[in-house]
Image (cartoon, rainbow, N blue to C red):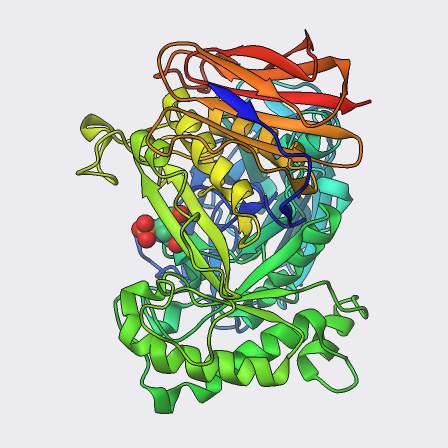
Length: 632
Ligand SMILES: O=S(=O)(O)O[C@H]1C[C@H](O)[C@@H](O)[C@@H]1CO
């Protein structure tokens, strides 16, 4: 193969080209969001139902149940945990929480614990609650005393800090609240527990540093190789939509004091605390230097119902308020004033707003839903760009969308065979966001089945290199492709903790694991350049693909070999280059995956290469090579 590179750029590489898609699937709660206690506020559960106590268990005979409190801690949190300490009890009696499939006890961290309590009946009890971090077998790693008074018949919030004495290797640990025998016979109501480790940039109610660190390290420590996502799509994906209109994501239920957030039954089979809410997302984007690509609910829910046109007005107003919460002026918008009251006077940065999600499932109603949402939102916010989620121009929409969000989940071969997907798109002023894409299966007739039917549990080299082939098409077509993000982003690998595979970053209570696709995303994102240099076109139905971009000082050649044999490539560059270059290669057995048990099976390697204005390079089988060439 010979690649002749043109010295004149054909188009810019948009700054937003590579970013992240996020929603609470497999691990917003218990993942990126740093709260360590699962079911911390008994949101959306049925009191008295055994499942209402999920993640909680009695300790030493504490009698616990979830009640609909006659005097709830807030209207958003009607349920409380009621503890009765049996008379005659001895030892430490109470209850504990198992966390999100474990709790990482780290002696270098200080944990902030809190809960609300009240005595439903006044009592003369005066003593301590002991909060602790302990192993499943009862070894106490940290404990603190919180004074509790039986005269406290109204809700009060109490706090404690926990600093473990050691860092056990196991994450099978519990957070416990116990009382000694002096409390025997007492009944106490509890609400809104919380246990936070240190958070990313120490933001209150913030992100877990290690998962964030996996990306934070991606951003800071390994700058050379790791990802700088330029945008963050939120809050979904399916998790925006609700299984019904009533359970859709409601922005104003996700802001304000945690005790005022009702949570919701998410779209992935578990209850979302909404502790990771709109304001947390916006601070996260700002801290990570990402633009929020924010979605508004657009009248369609996953049960397949679309609201009729004459019922849309309140939801259009809700979308206007949501956008004003982000960018409005506090002096003329109550939503913006709410933002200011929560400590953020200044607007956030926002350019793109997505109207719905995957509305190709409801194209007919999207005709009027898009017309009314995009029509009114464009009038209210002419400076914003609105993204449509039906298939491009099918159906014809008015106002004409300037942006569409395309999604594709396919096989490795499909991605390698479709790297020219955007080459034939009409250049008519429309821009495209590849908002979701991933290899999900090796079985073209069962893309979403079980692993026995070809579904990937983790990305594989074959899949990741297929994705890389497809991504070369994003850069060749970056005159119309303005953004792209692999989906989904995160996966808690504990049994029962995930709903979708594969994912970009896996994690458990103590670690984050980078998949082979994570490395592909990093390598493209960190070497995206600022302009595209045209070159000999690859054979669309071949197995070798490339993309050449440059910034002021460097030429980046991304070379993808999707074959199981090496590929010799001759490059003819348009100008003299210094002879020193580096090549970073991701390659391995096509079925190889990085897994929690073998997290670094396949990682990129960087070596020096000698090159000239014309040079040969041999691409390994199933490989992505990124050549970084200093322009002399
Ligand atoms: O079942 S799917 O529609 O394939 O779900 C996909 C598409 C949806 O936008 C996202 O939430 C999800 C996984 O990333």
